[in-house]
Structure formats: structure tokens, C-alpha cells
Length: 73
Image (tube, rainbow, N blue to C red; front, side, top):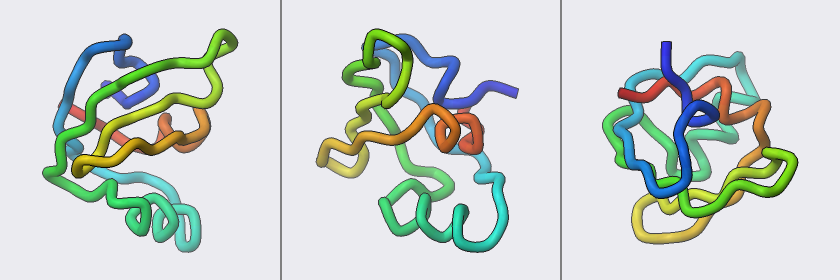
């Protein structure tokens, strides 16, 4: 299983599945990360947390813990 956390800077991928329960999954979906959407990794902080993405034409920073809940292909 490949997640957003496994992507390198400059890589793109398509969201395949969201993991997590209740409010965590809802928050990820509210940020615009849903099944089938393309994500592009813009930057990763020096210690790997947070990860800056481009999703649906806007920039978004997510925590490494949240990135592990988003499976991509």
C-alpha cells in the first residue's frame, strides 16, 4: 500500500482510498482529498512533518499522520 507519505517532492498520484474513522476521515474529505482526486507533493518540511500538497488547484499542508491514512496509486 502506497500512501501520500511515501511520495517524493515533485511526484503526483491519484487518491485510491481513505482510511481513518469518523471525524478524522471527515476532516480529510473536507480539505478536498477524496477518492479519484489528483495530489501533487510540493514540499516536505525538513523533519517530514507537515507535507505541502497541491489539491484541486490550491495548496494544502497536512500532517504526516494524516498522510499515512491516504492511499494513492
